Length: 194
Image 1 (cartoon, rainbow, N blue to C red):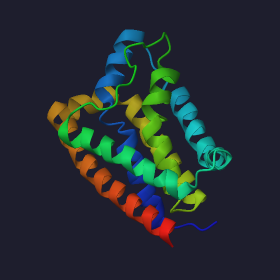
Image 2 (image 1 turned 180 degrees about the vertical axis):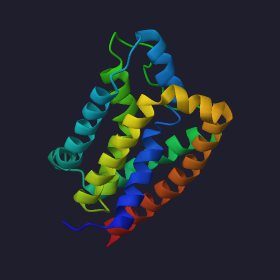
Image 3 (image 1 turned 90 degrees about the vertical axis):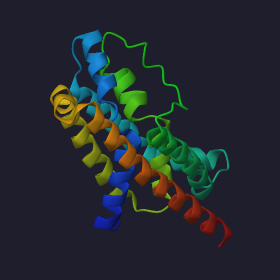
Image 4 (image 1 turned 135 degrees about the vertical axis):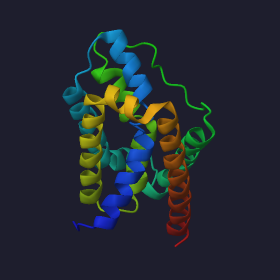
């Protein structure tokens, strides 16, 4: 296992863009109003466990059904591409069941599927095709720390950034995610034809 700071930074940015914890602040605030309290630590730990387990077990699951990581990475790049379009254009392609918030929103829908959802799980396996697992684990850890801080300070962050600030952040990370989706797609195609 090799520690590569550039890979850690890239993987962290991909996960940050896909998880979109800043963009999800309005949803988090709404859930906090409905349920009264969100356990930031619990939500962070559960999301981190789901992402890390999928990083190591996801590849074996794919092997069982005869799909390579590169093929999954190409498929994943399409998911990232559409998530990026959502962020840039402000449209909704993927509909999550956010309305059915239970008495404890920490696990559902915050930890899963808001944070450890289809986009982030696909991203993890797409990144696995390119980067060392250690670098991705560190990237997951970095994102879980950011998630914890954002969950703790969501109301203050919303007041600080305002609706326009959150909108701008979403669009900037959308463009970054779009470029990363194209990179994952081209790398996956190259590796398949090698």
